[in-house]
Image 1 (cartoon, one colour):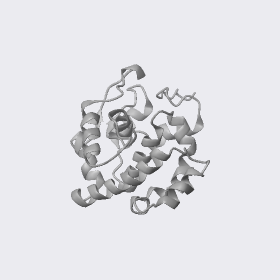
Image 2: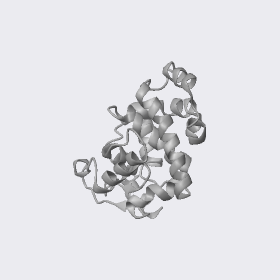
Image 3: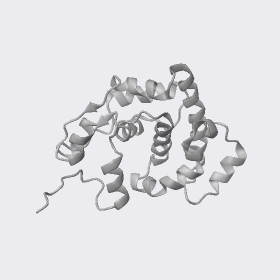
Length: 192
């Protein structure tokens, strides 16, 4: 008889959410382009559910040139209008324009710090913060680290990077391990 695999409850029974939880969420990420992709998606999530974003993630990836910040930073008004007509993504003009200016700010940070990875991981001392939650309700929406990250990103010209968005980014990028201690991924992420 196969042992029951305990997992975090937030993915529910949605296949996309389960796959995201089981394969990506909380895994330490150090690839600049993928980090930019998470920043884009987390900004678009503001005010929406992650399920909405995950369902549209591939459409976002296609619409925003595989989240290449060099390409996105050069988008002009024609591209903004094209994106506003793309029903496969979330057509929020403020978030689309913020993505372009965030790409420009992202490249500026890469230039000054050598990589975005080096810049962003400073907020956790360049290591994953491992939490020990036993219930989802213990998980914070923001922390002092996400407050500092948010303030720094805003100072560098980023938009849609409030502390709650930054904390969601930190969870996704593995800067914090917020899998419940009972979840099978908790130990796997710590050992990775």
